[in-house]
Image (tube, rainbow, N blue to C red):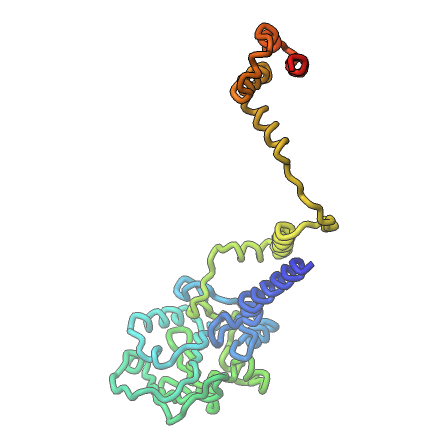
Length: 340
C-alpha cells in the first residue's frame, strides 16, 4: 500500500513540475521576450494583437521581413526593440527598412524602456541618413516589473512630425510608405492597455492599414516544421494525452501488481536431512546398484578380521552378483548368523 501511495505522489509531482516548467510558460507566454504578441501576461502585447484582430486582418511574422511581401496597406509592428543597439545600425540594415517602405508598407518600431546609457558622441548612420537623434534624460528605469517610462527622447529633423506628444512618437514618410518610432512603448503592453485603452494612439500607429503584421522573427521565434506544429495543425493534442496516460499506467503496472497481495503464511520450521538420508543420497550418486553388494562385502571383510573366513566363499560370490540386492543381503546375513 505504501508503494502505491509513493508512486502516485511521484507521478503527481512529475505532472506538476511538467506543468510549471513547460505548459505554464507556454500558456502565459512567459517563455517569449518582452512585448511579444505571444505573451498574455503584463509584459506581452497579446491584448493589442487580439484587439486589432477584431477589426482588421492580423497575423504574426515568423520569418525575415525581407522575405515577406507587405505591399501597400500593411503596417508592420516591430515591438520590444533595444534603442541603444538599434541606434547603431549600419547602412545596409537601414536600406532593408527603406526597401520595405518603398513597397508602401508602414513600419512601426517601438523601443524598450531604458535608463540613461553612457554618453556616446559618435555620429551614427541612422542620424545622418534618417535625420533622427537619440537623446536620453536622467531617468532610471525600474526593474522587477514592466517600466512605465523610458529615458529615451527622440528628436527628429524637418522630415519628422510629432505623432503624439505624450508617448514621444515620431513619424516620417519613407519611399511610398512611412516609418514610426515610439519611445514610450508601455501603452502597447497588456498592462498598459488594462489601465488605459490608448485608442487614439493605436489608431495613429496603425495608420491607413488594412493588414497588421506583428514581427516575431526579431525575437528569435522562427517557424519550423516541428512535431509540435504538426500536432497543433492536425489536432493531435488528445493523442498526446492518451500516450501520457498509457505511459503512466505502464509505470504503475511495472512498479506494483494489480492482483491483491497474498496472505502471509504461518511460520514453519524448515527441516533438513539426517545423517542416514545423507548417506543414502551419497551412495545412490556414487555406487551403481549392481555393485552395491560387492562393495559392501569388501568393506565388511576389511573390518571383520577373521569372521569372514566362516562364510562360504561360493555362497558369497553367488549372492554378490544376484540381481535382487535385498535378497542377497538377507541370505548373506542369514549365513553369518548360522555360522556363529
